[in-house]
Amino acid sequence: MDSTLPHYSRAQLALRNGQDRPEIWVAFQGKIYDMSHSRLWKNGKHYEHWAGQDLSDELKDAPHTAQVFEKFQAIGILT
Image (tube, rainbow, N blue to C red; front, side, top):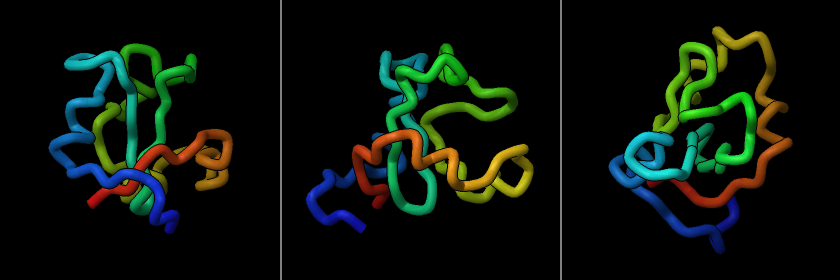
């Protein structure tokens, strides 16, 4: 993992849900991604998934693979 990225707690991630703050962040496999500019994450919701959470365990139910995260820049590490 990129040790130069800032570290964020689960509580800090939870605040970036598109509701409490304008940022829309999700975590996946230890990295945090900013989805704020994705039209698919409008208002912090993407189908049945909500921003501000670790989505690592939810990928198995998604119609796409983990490669979808390659489109987004990791902005932090979930600690």
